[in-house]
Image (cartoon, rainbow, N blue to C red; front, side, top):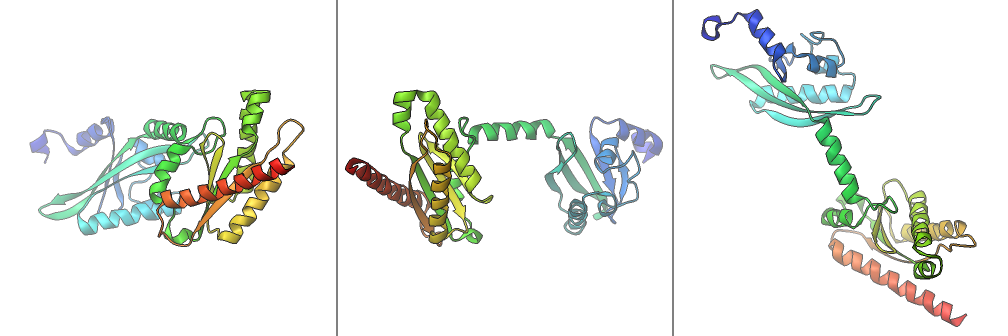
Length: 288
């Protein structure tokens, strides 16, 4: 080996340590045999402190350590590499590393694993920021229509049934805009959005569809629970009403017991029911 590359083992190790890449080697027992500095630091130790140990032994996050170890075993068993991104939480914020691993063969026999670790923190953070911007309504902080379009492709999973779609249409927004100005109209929408977020469960998702319309996706909500949530929302709106802004809305919902209806049809039913409720509200106003 030394004659072929012109360097002895010590010099080869120096070259690997100085390489503009974060490299590690593991043997067939999934134990580290070489690791550049960043690999050691990411795993919570000083340079070379992880040598001779498996990820199960060195990872502070036991689940992550088990995942890495099982992934190594799979590579040794199948002879196929892997590629994934891992998040490492720190007090100053999470760091993200892409980890690529391949088996090393010698005379058709696997003798270990070689891996490269790439810092993709900037890329992931930027992607998260862009995703947040593209999926978040600036005025209310809720998800926007872009998110609804993406979510509609898989709006409910089998474990989520029954799922209710609740449509909300704000009353009085036009009156507020006309008499008080759009600044107060925006404030009305923000108060509505805040009430929705405070009232729904953690697994439910609130979306500003556009204008004064909102949609709530409510996994594990049958029609009775949907009606109860609507009552709670009405109470929340009433409690936040003052002498200037009246929080009031029309509601409609559809409960999916299975995935028989695609999102577009389920949404249409909830929307139709909401407008039926809105019509009743207008009739009641006119009779007063």
